[in-house]
Image 1 (cartoon, rainbow, N blue to C red):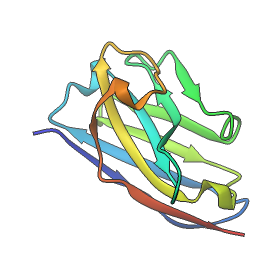
Image 2: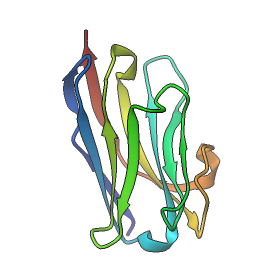
Image 3: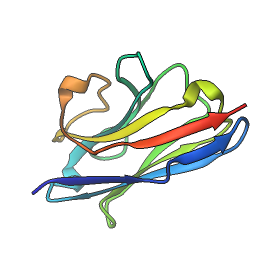
Image 4: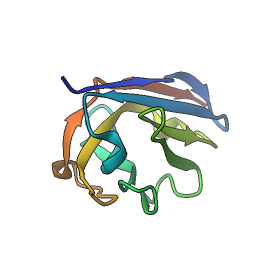
Length: 125
């Protein structure tokens, strides 16, 4: 059974930093693309960052470039999202997603097969 478990959300302050983690089990993690998405109230789910299966390629939404960093640890079957310089517009539910075998750093939700339950991030000004 595929399981993706996000952690690290909660409350943050504008200008601060937080790191999200997503532990993956029951999935061929080391050969799969992975992504982080977020959804704010009343908005569509958007990809904030993605990483290809080998870790050699990444994608970032324009709104987070230079502030967020996605990384993966294949030994721990875990991906991370380091978030710096947070601002209130980053408030959303954050989801990790597991993509295709040998997949690229895709931003489209349709390229991902399994999703976590999400973790809420609230950034105060």
